[in-house]
Amino acid sequence: MTSEEKFLFDLQGYLVVKNVLSSEEVAHLNTILDREFGDDYDETDVKRTSRVSLWDKACQNLFDHPNILPYLVDLMGPKFRADHDYCILMKKGAKRGNLHGGDTEHVTGRAADHWYKYRDGVMRNGLTVFTYNLAPAKKGDGGFSCVPGSHKSNFPTDLPKDVRTFERIPHYVVQPEADAGDVIIFTEALIHGTMPWNGDHERRALLYKFSPGHSSWSLNYYNVDEYEGLTEQQKRILTPPSVGNRPDVVESTP
Image (cartoon, rainbow, N blue to C red):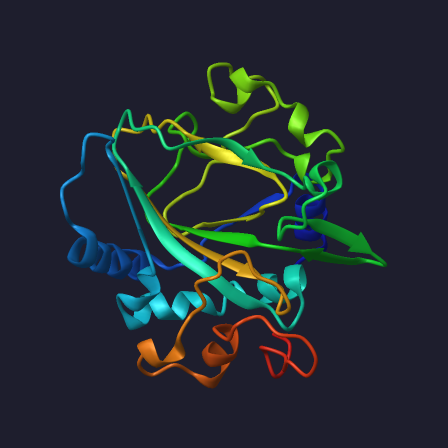
């Protein structure tokens, strides 16, 4: 990560990384999405399904795409692991999820995998999301939204209910813009959610979530035997949480 990217992630709790995927990669992934999940929408106008990484080798390779690998190492350390993955598709007018998340362990007393820490020039995060955008999300389209800086808030549970439900959208709730091929990275310690989708086109997002090697959010761990042709690096990424002699994911830092 560049110095400016580190500054922005520490400040905001999220980062938009431009042009992670080429136009050819976006087109190929959209073709796979149509092939594997082209079913009709229900009355909610939202479609979601898990384990998109099993669809195709191209989806499997999003675990360690070379353009995101340095961010994974810098944000979670060299022993990070994949926690779970899924996709969200939305049609115009669809509603998905209220604002949620935030580092609430110090408020509720419940241990969780949603946290952000900084010490001696190093950032570390619990569950962290890498959202691959396969369609643009322009200003006002909706989709991913957040309260920048809330990953360090001491009052995360005090967010008003009408703000959480998007009945009122104050200036401090933002919807970051992204183009197809961009990746939005954010820590689950950030208060975030999904605004109603207002775009005339379909929202298309693949969400890959990662944790430090010793922790997890999902208890449904990956089974490497379900995948064909995994690299040794991908096998390390898909292993369940562990402590002790867990190897670094990347043999040499990118």
